[in-house]
Amino acid sequence: MSSSTDHNEKLLQKYLDGQCTVAETEELYAWLQSSGANRSLLAAMQREFEKTLGEHHEIPSEVSDRIETRLLQDISRDKVVKIHSRTRIRWAVAAAALLLLGSGLYYMTTVSSRKTFTTSNSTVADTGDIAPGTNKAILILANGDVVTLDSAGNQVINQGQTQVRQKNGQLEYAVQGNSDAVVYNTLTVPRGGQFNIVLPDGSHVWLNAASSLRYPTAFNGDRREVELQGQGYFEVAPNARQPFYVKANNVEVQVLGTRFDVMAYADEKSINTTLLEGLVNVKNGTTQQKLKPGQQAIVDPASGIMVVGAADVDQVIAWKTGFFEFDNASLGDILRQLARWYDIDVSYNQTGNERLFGGRISRGLPLSDILHMLEANGPTFLLSGRKLTVTSGK
Image (cartoon, rainbow, N blue to C red; front, side):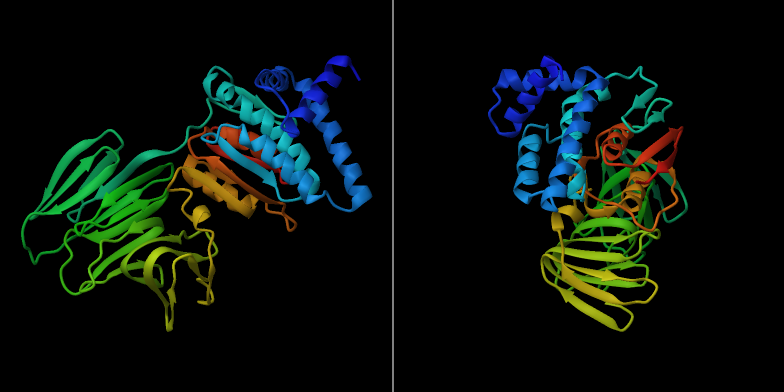
């Protein structure tokens, strides 16, 4: 082993032990970015951890936790916190790759002239990379007129006694008088988009990509009712005399002044209602269950079975705060989210023994950066135009 490699190995060890000076940390980052040959060190680290695994049957949790803590605390958290395989035998390589990616994200996102992105596993062909989603939606008025909305638009639409105002990435409703003629609009967010709407009663709804909300231009009568497809986060204005209802396929959520998330995508295996604050009653057919804050109701659309349990609230609403967050997620789970947010088509033959992933990644990154992070943990991809093919899921 060369003296230079030996020196950098010592620097890496000092970094993991929390003993690197600022200058030494900058030197280590510069070295990791300098050449693909540095991956030999990553391979050596993997061999050492596999040796430890063979001797002790598993990587001691305090060792992997120390690596995770030291590597992640210096990575810019508005870029990536972590993405790694849940299998401890691979964690050493995943963490080391994260250090490389975390320190190199600025380079990857600013060099626009590159047409290929290379990792240790494969070359991902690219025709200009794919940018993340933006604030955009289509408003379908009751009379069939279509209004295009985006993050820059500012306009006012009058519908009888209701005024609809678009301001930047938000739509606001204001009822200017009493009217018995209630009509319904539909806000549709395409793949690659998100949007925020303030309903006539002052309730706020954030719609995720590939989602739609059908709602009245005014809430009359003894109930407020909207219909959701896809995923929406709700902050409902309290009104005990006029309860709020969300219908998502066959599931009905009754609300009394609360914050909650409903995920009801057609390509997901369940319809999930997660309560952050207040009280909701989730009903599916003849089955109903009240939720407490921090609980989630999971409904199987095929069987109608409802299961209620504790929820990872931060993970559920990560999309609203600008992140993907995974915990024991299969590659298929991740790819469905990427397909909606980056507006891509995915070709993937799922295997029966999939690796599980955990991590938190900014939704503001270009697609190539996220593919690199995933490839550091096994799968390989081919990106051509807007079609992503998984060439290996291992």
